Amino acid sequence: MEQLVHGGDWAGYRAQFGRDALDFSANVSPLGLPEGVAKAITAALPTADRYPDPLCRELRAKLALHEGVPADHILCGNGAADLIFRLVWARKPRRALVTAPTFAEYAAALETIGCTVERFILQAADDFAVPEAFLSAIDDRVDLVFLCQPNNPTGQLTPPDFVARILQRCTACGALLVLDECFLDFLPDHAQLTAKPLLGSGDLLILKAFTKLYALREKVHQLNSPDLNYVWRFMQSSDHFYYMATKWFSDGDVHSYFNPYGSPYEAFVNYMNVLSDFEIQIQRRLEAYQNKQAVPA
Image 1 (cartoon, rainbow, N blue to C red):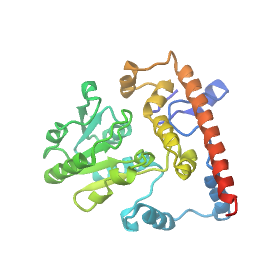
Image 2 (image 1 turned 30 degrees about the vertical axis):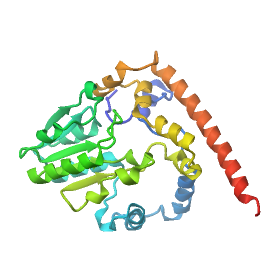
Image 3 (image 1 turned 90 degrees about the horizontal axis):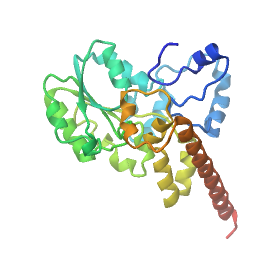
Image 4 (image 1 turned 45 degrees about the horizontal axis):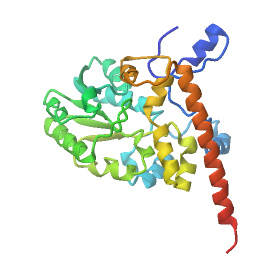
């Protein structure tokens, strides 16, 4: 079976073994399709006989209002990985800098064009945070820098003031800074952490995505309960998904130091039990909240 780096080959597994696999190789939501998304898809079925707008005009207009940036600054793609590859193929950098460990798709895209990939090794002694020395690794030879914010798989967040300094360094060296904020919106203070205020002050591109646990996000934010918010943030740690993973790569080794589980299956059972309990708590509190709102004054 061909080995795939990003996500599991569930179709190939089914064809070879005649059954579906428990696929832990991609950290997608185990809760299924959100109800709102299902309704939107159903409502769009009458237009399924034609290609969608290639420029995504309506989507970009709504995203512009939500993100607070001009619509002509937004480019939509089929997931963040699609945009990463398109960016690399359009920019064609000769030398790029990434941290290690980080999201594997950056290097995979860069290597398709023969780009030299410089890896800045993050240290366990620093809790895998991006250190001051990262600035020195950006020089006139580097054309492009990928920085994951917060980083995948370490979960480390680079302070916004340090991100600003990294952008200044990239600008001075003529390098494009690609800041991956696909996980940032899960943080309650994401509005204060985003690099969007830096747009226009340097050569900066920000990646965002509709991703992961959005099936519960709206309900959690509606309740705005400190204890639920705490659990919500904890459950989105990438550690959980690496504990459940059966497909290991070099960045998975980071988690072997402190994995409390004896097997991926044990990690999966524990996570799903916690997730199920969490979903029940949210639903109960949401019903109580809605009943309270419905009581006439």
